[in-house]
Length: 82
Image (cartoon, rainbow, N blue to C red; front, side):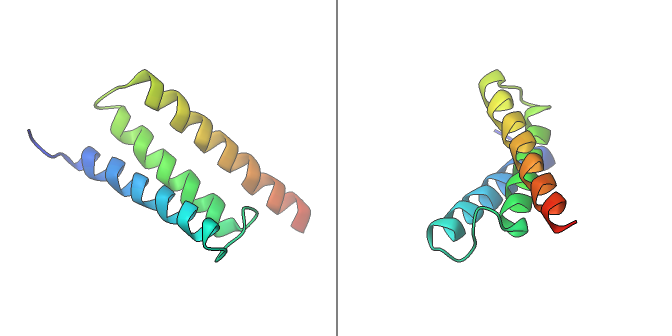
C-alpha cells in the first residue's frame, strides 16, 4: 500500500472536520461560528480532492453535501453581517 499526497489531503480533511465537531461539542465554538463552518468546508473539500483519485460514490455524495451546506452557512453568516 502506498501513501500519496491525495491520501494526506483526505486525512487532513477528516482531522479538520473531527476537530470542528469536537470544538462544537466542547462548546468552544458555535454552529454559527465562521471558524466551525470554514473547518467543515475546507475539510470536506480536502476529502473530495482525495476522492477524485480513489473514488467512492457514497463518500463523494456526503462530502459534496457537506461542502454545500457549510458554504450555505457561511453565506448566511455574511448576509446577516451586511
